[in-house]
Image (cartoon, rainbow, N blue to C red):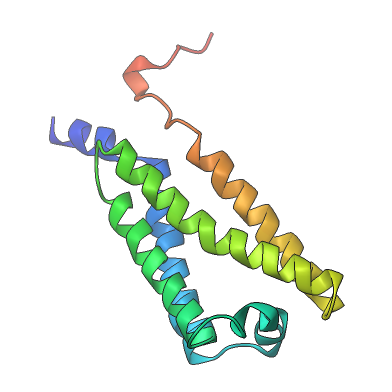
Length: 144
């Protein structure tokens, strides 16, 4: 009986929130605050001149949204909180997609690759957020 409860509590959608949330926190802390790449700093230059603290502030945005998504991924039977977790991981990726797109169209053409990648990832997050977990095995149709 205990195994059945554990299987019912597992959710791929929540596992996605935890995995991506931890990745976001790591990217913000290690990749933006700790060791920003030249291409990231250059592609975000139009944004960082308007943000107090520049890349550090944006890095902390990634850490915060990542940790929020991770926490919501551990909440069972809280779909509204899980929706908040999906928003938390979509916002920074969407922001990056928009800013890199603007940079690619104006001052930094090499940002086009990052714009495509972050845009596609944002769309992927939106698609996963609307998916349902598969039903437990005892509720699935039997194969013929």
